[in-house]
Length: 337
Image 1 (tube, rainbow, N blue to C red):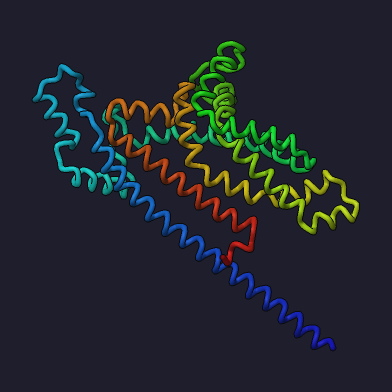
Image 2: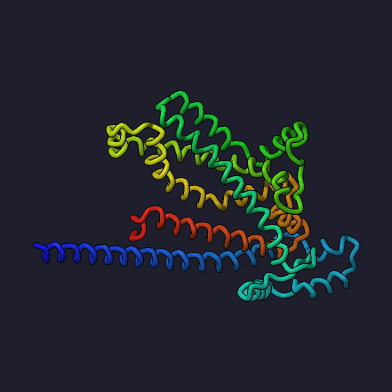
């Protein structure tokens, strides 16, 4: 009998190891697949962006030297910037430089593009992280409340508010927030950025709140639907039958199960959030990607435009990759998918 038990135990251990190995191979296949997709997306992004920005109207040499520049001066500056070469040659040079981690030198600022991006990017990331934190803090209670109480009127009221918020552009919310909160109430600076932390919090909190309005409607609806689905599951009825209080059910069973939709939604909203951050930065005069891209477009600073676009694209692809990996960690069932 003892030997039979040992044999069964051995089979269980072997089965567990086999399952773990299979899950590991599945996760590895998922990672390799996502990395391959990421490389293809980045290459397409590099070539497409380099080609498109050079088809934009306007002459960067004219923008730098002004309307009174002589033809000789314009010709000399175009040659210096490499703008007299063919479009294909310029794009291939740009790609070759990017492959060597060299995004070139800014035409208008006369600085390496990488240095400009590395200065601006942390500011944009701070606003994005702050916006996500505010959106989660607001959306989870707003989504849980009507679902737990089974209150149709409250559900409809919150739904209408979310639709209205979704319809208002972020720059409109930003302008009103700037006028009311910063100018009239003086609760925040009307623009700019500080020299370091914790002083930067004074400048960051209001743009982050404005940015959160882009996510709050989406996250609230996701929390609400997920909560309703979870509450209909049999294990919730079993928990109630065991006498578990509602708050305990929410903490132990509902919140962990609505985590997956939130991770997915936040991860795949990175591109939308990044675009919103650029707009909000422009409204508040924050020195992030918004200021960099606006100045680059106005001066036809092609290396900076390509650099910002490329950097943003890679950032979104990496966030999506991390979202997929985090998803496999939270839900082991996806590892073999």
